Amino acid sequence: MPSAGKDLETLSTDARSDAVNEAGGDSSLVKFSEAKVMMVDDDTLISEVVQTYLEDGGYRNLIAINDPRDALDTARRENPDLLLLDLMMPGISGFDILAAIRADEDLKFLPVIVLTAATDPSSKLKALELGASEFLAKPVDPSELLLRVRNSLAFKVYQDHLAYSDAVTGLPNRRIFMRRLIGTVLRSTKQGGTFALVHIDLDRFKNINETFGHQVGDHLLKTTGDRLNDCLRGTDMVGRLSGAQDEVLARTGGDEFAILLPGLLNSQNAAQVTRRLLQSISKPLSIAGKDLFLTASAGIAVYPGDGMDSEMLLKNAEFAMYQAKQNGRNRQEFYSSTLNEASRERLRLENDLHRALERNELILHYQPKVDLQTDRVVGAEALLRWQHPELGLLPPLTFISIAEESGLIVAIGDWIIAEACRQGAAWCAQGLGTLKIAVNVSSYQLTGERILGVIKRALDESGFAPSALVLELTESILMNDAASSIQMLEKLKALGACLSIDDFGTGYSSLSYLKRFPLDELKIDRSFVSGLPADETDVSIVRAIIALAHSINLKVVAEGVETIEQLDALRVLNCGTYQGYFFSRAIPADDFTTLTRKQNSGTAS
Image 1 (cartoon, one colour):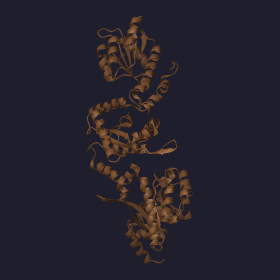
Image 2: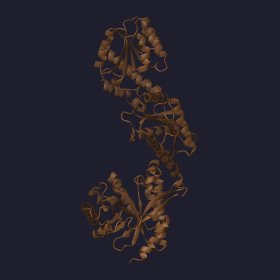
Image 3: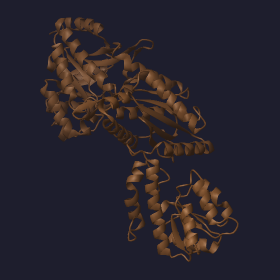
Image 4: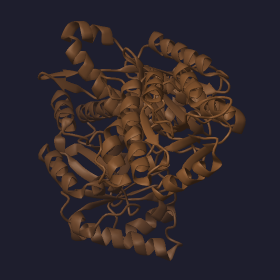
């Protein structure tokens, strides 16, 4: 039990921190100063005195009942954390109330401190038999009152932790989750609004349990719970109503988890959070020197469209989860038609994108890069397109964000590098010379060092010259962790690849870091090119970027060139290379071949 010398805040931290953290912040596990204390005494003077003592001790959430006939209904409605109960009252005694509380499923673990002037052994014994937690003799001593209240609340925290926490993961269990779900339904029914229930089930967990044993299985469950919890804490919950309750995460049984997302403005926000949750589960896990890859399937039910009560919502979320498993696992499904057409289309694209790589639906288009002095095509930027079997040719803006959120961006990025190298080598073999092929590299690909192996393998298998591969990175990627970026760039440079900063001028590069980055090229963002030559500010900015690049021996590419006036201005400013609609938009490889042959055959070498 806590010592009497500690103040309330210190004591509450010592007694509760682990239990509250593991229980996901359930409302029944509140700070001691916020605990709901209910007093039942027919003597209003004694109630007022006790209330004053408690308020002096820092308690503010107090309920005083002077008519014992109201005690049980009030306790059921208010669900207090502690009950102070007088024994000797007319009509209904404290013994009667205590017996009724211990018979109530929701109140049977409520700690009860008996306040009584009856100190005879038979009364004490009877109260103990009925489930009293503590005794206080009247008149009440304030120090003893505060100590016994504090001790009873500390024991309740421990008791609630045992009753409501899952032993393996430390998360809230199904029992407490259902209580919170019921409360959220009631609150939403009265106040309006919507919320989502997400049901997650691990894929093929039974096979892992049988292969590696239950100890490994429990470790995976604990890790999954930790990852889900960390993901929820790190999630930027856009689209939440102000004042919305916190999310609730629980292990509801076996390899099943449930998440309550209250206060949503629309269903798309639930889809966004669920994607992040599934991504967090799918990260590789090393056990006994072996990497295990775990995935999960999720079903989402949205109140009120998918159910007006807790049981129906949970049932429908589980049904949607089974649909996700039937549709290939490692995915999410909504129960019904609560999504609007845009959300449905997004989900459809995500489902189709999972199969786009294996079906060879992704293709690259190439936008020519032209030398400003010779007018020869000297390279190209490889730009991703998706030849959807039903929707036709889709630009990257339609699906790149989906690829990033679903985790497919890394595999797609690997394919782009390999395909660009293959195509560059093919053009060289066709007599077009060694054209520099640029590919965009995302921050997801730069996590760890796997991209080094991807690039080396693409170069080795294609025979493409390493110096002809240009990796384009944005300023924001490089400056996110500049010191680590320098190390990664040096490793990429060691492979022989060229390095370029894309959209230069729109980020926040530090010049002190810029000179340390082992770069080969700067690309002037189209927003500065568009104002040439009329906008004097844009002219000054472009002139400064070109001068800066030349001063540190970097080549310059201007993008977004659309007019002859822009082209002439760039030539005067001594820009080296340009790309844009003035010469050509991004085109298929065969068209690029034809265009390049025609352009370069008609220009001087």
